[in-house]
Length: 305
Image (cartoon, rainbow, N blue to C red; front, top):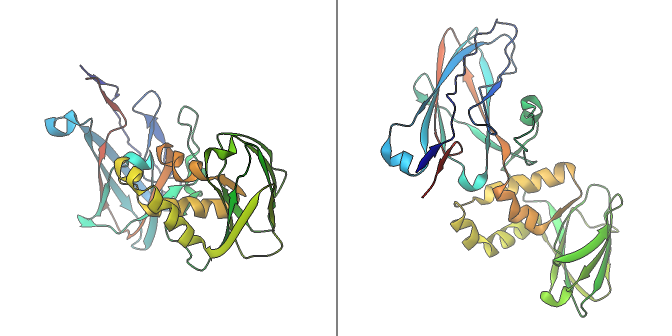
């Protein structure tokens, strides 16, 4: 039996020239959809959305085709637009954008925080919290490998200003994270041969100490990301061909605002989290500039076998 958990989605935004704002309506009981957003209040924008579930081949795969059409009016200047969309990277669908029937060059930004879509999502805040997939190859770091010699081990680390940490721990652990300090106790530590602690940022006085042996080496942050990504590549391939660019964006988010991230949270669990991702593009807008968006949607259709 096929269950269609969908409501008809209608986005019509007829707004005065000085008060454009995007908004969302639920097409599912939980998952919202967002319209096109523009910060330029002098741009007059209106449009509509159509969801086509008539293609049997797509529908059998739990997909539908979503087509959006927008008309923007301005005085011929170049304007930046943002299309926010809620998705998981492991099943993200391609979105195609056209301006006056020509493909638009769009930049993809990933949200840095997971979105709890059963709560109200502030679209404007989400737009300000997208992170680029480009990564600075000059960022340096230090990889510490903690080699356990007992079932219970302890690790302590102090980060300097501007540094961040990607760390690995045993299944059973307890710890304190006051400020930029870490005090971690790992139980059942012998379950693994070693644990990684990667400090992002220039070496300073940060020192990792442990109740067991520690090895360290310098390497760039990008080299470390590439190494861990390669170790999980087979898993990523099974889970929707997750691109390494997504991991770059999440490390950019870590560097940009947090001190710590557990390794499996960053490299594994993050791919199944919903987040508000963004497509940004620019277009010269004159009277009735026409924009189109095409995407496949899987979030609102469930199939029961």
